[in-house]
Image 1: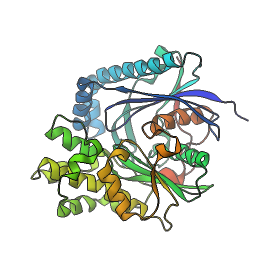
Image 2 (image 1 turned 30 degrees about the vertical axis):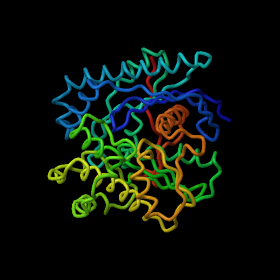
Image 3 (image 1 turned 120 degrees about the vertical axis):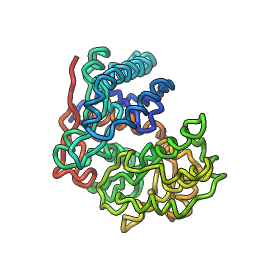
Length: 366
């Protein structure tokens, strides 16, 4: 029997709004106690630097050419993650953290070309915190033929186990990208990226206004969906691929919306997110008994209502089952850090397309 470890998970997603931080207690199997969650917002300066680098980095060569600029940004981001660790540790002084699961900030995700790039200095973070850091969760999976994403399925399955939902059931995370974990039976999990989540909407909104996102989907609600442009997005080759599959935020181009005003562009992109999720669910022969939604996009009422119109099975926010939908990803990386440390598999052929069950993160000791 494994002993329980306290693990701190850090997640900064493709929305680049800040750092989600969670502490969980687990044995990497069925034991789970969520101890605490906090959020540290990125300031405008860091967010703008990140966006600039991500827009410039279209290949590994671009990444290497920008190495000087990226190294400085990587250090800044690592120091912010250290700050986030300190904030949550101060609130939980009675707990000794055993591990940190450090996702880093994704710059480029190209599994078909054999690589993925997340920035964040794990060695420095370990040195500053004096805690073992586990990171580079995607690397081993990709080297063995997998997509390196999504990585949340095992944690999603654990949540569904804890809630005792009748199978098949599913969790859909609407972050920068939307992904699904469909638990068909105790031994069968299917997972894949479904399509854009919030990333394109956020990018569109911030290019047209001073806002970072469409709060509650209110802008989308006042716009008109341009069906011809929606069809152009849906004709992307990504939708024709069979799962498992993963997505890079750069796989879609906003240029086709150039003629649209703010409201119509937001409505069209928000409908793309809803349609992507519906297409993904329709991949399954059997609808889930229940679908739980997590991630920032679950709060977008326009997206939620349009999914509910088309999918005839019960859809709930994960929060209704006492799991905070803002922190399932940071909790995931805390959980995967434990599994990686204990040399347990974190990805499977049906979750990432890896050839065989694969071990995960690399371990950094201060």
